[in-house]
Picture 1 (cartoon, helix red, strand yellow):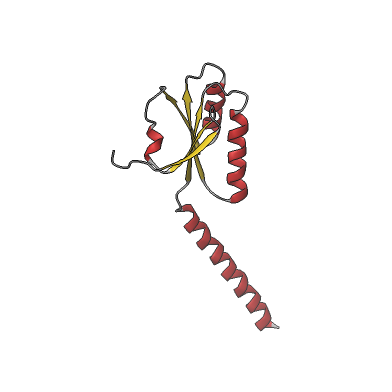
Picture 2 (tube, rainbow, N blue to C red):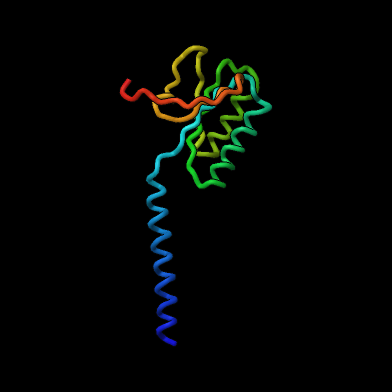
Length: 127
């Protein structure tokens, strides 16, 4: 009976060690980067950000979200600022109409809300 009890304790100890190993390797993985290009999208931006964060929680993947505000004159900026204050994985920047976004230096996805298009981009490291 003592041998069975020690066997059960050993299995639980191995499970704990495995869980810690997985967690330590997962934290070293690089986050997927998404760039949302938004103009006057106050009605949609909160839904996009919440669904991307929900996807991140459900799938267990880390996301880094950058919102580029392009010619926005509505309440999009305050909504995005609030998300950025409460979440470390969301940041925002203003972008001039034809400027090269600094966030494009890494690899990821660029989602242009005005066009409804998702494009994969490769950054230009060292440029």
